[in-house]
Amino acid sequence: MEGQAAVKVDLPFFRYHPDPVASGSIRAAAEACACCERDRGWIYTATFYTAREVDGHFCPWCIADGSAAERFAGEFVDSIGLDGVSDEVLHEVTRRTPGFHAWQDPHWLVHCQAAAAYVGEVGYAVLAARPDALAQLRADMRLDGWRDEAQLEQFLNHLGESATAMLFRCTVCTAHLAYVDAS
Ligand SMILES: [Zn+2]
Ligand SMILES: [Zn+2]
Image (cartoon, rainbow, N blue to C red; front, side, top):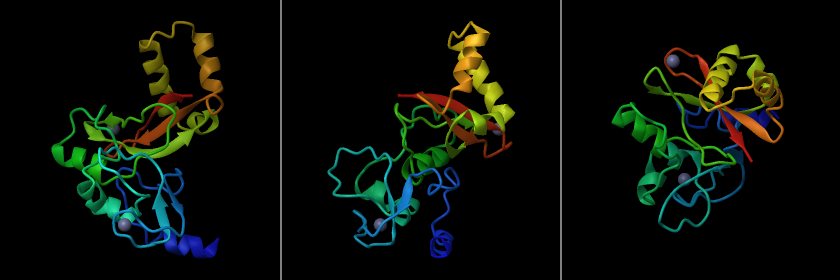
């Protein structure tokens, strides 16, 4: 849709989640933001962790400038997994970056000692087009105790059905990496 593409250009840029519309974390909606109370035409629908009560959803701008996280003392992304990154990056990922929908508690991947950028939830076909991610996933699963190679390949081949892969791209070397999410 032409109009939608034009508006999308105006969305704030999230270095660690470059296309939150494609990933489904932000969608077009005529809804007032729970922070700025304005209807900006786009609303965030994924995770936010806070002890405060939040009446509704946030607009992408209140995520990008940190005002939603500050006002409600919360985080969009859990810091689990974000080991070895600078405090500044940790702050940007947890408090100024949209999280994403997942079956299990989402976690962020790190590569080259930097937070990776979240691309989206993918199945085997997309993963197969990124052999670096597939190879890394295979190695991780072997470490997790998958001994039977045939079983492992069968599992990977069915990603996108009951289990999916969360795909990231390294913000330093651009390698793709992924982890498995299952219902
Ligand atoms: Zn807002
Ligand atoms: Zn890297």
